Image 1: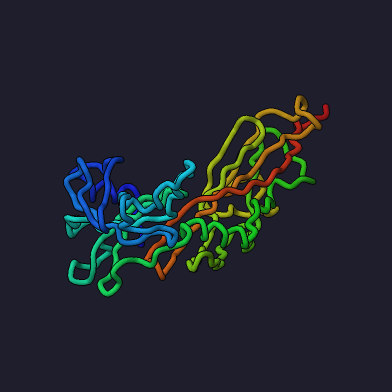
Image 2: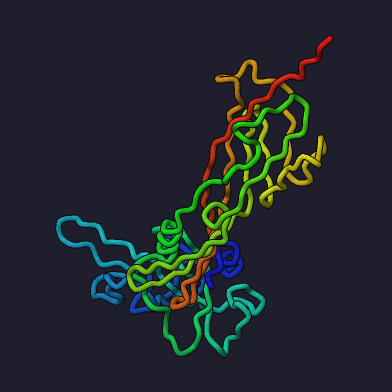
Length: 285
């Protein structure tokens, strides 16, 4: 499982990877870093160890000035290997395999992953697996929160507690899972809403966990136990006589690519607009 930049920092504490590093014939010394790098997996369009070109994971430039195409991911075996307590080992030992650095220029992913013995290198991907994961997420058709409160048809009063909550569904709250395959890489992605941000339209924003608690008449004027707001001004000065707000869900997506012993996490957002009519209490003499 790929460990991200934080883990990489620990692994490379002895020196940062120099941008001028080269690996000849599948291995070499990273200049200025003090560690050997064995480049062991490339895009299938590359020619490792090509005559007259440094083994950087790209084809040499051709006549006419055409630039080489960078590989989606490059795997390099770290030498020396990181300490036993480094996350890159993922609970394994040196008897079972080795820790590799993973660099995917297209998505900017950098981290480390454990590669078991018996597989000289991870299968060379033709595409960054995180990009495949994003394709899987697209197929899920995730949407913004289904706002149940405040209700568009509701009438609310200045200073009174407002309860906010959402109706849960697979597409609006999760969890939802899908698979996608591209370039020989199959990825499973699972998405769920981790937090939601509520812009109430009056300059107030709230970040909440969970779907919120639905309001019922017997709750009277009590406060919501987990997600509530009080408007302090009426909508008299608001366009169309309503506060215009938005609920934005942060979807946490966890993905795995078993064939590459790889995986990770990213966040996507979806938004839903809502309105609230808030007025003053009229007192009759």
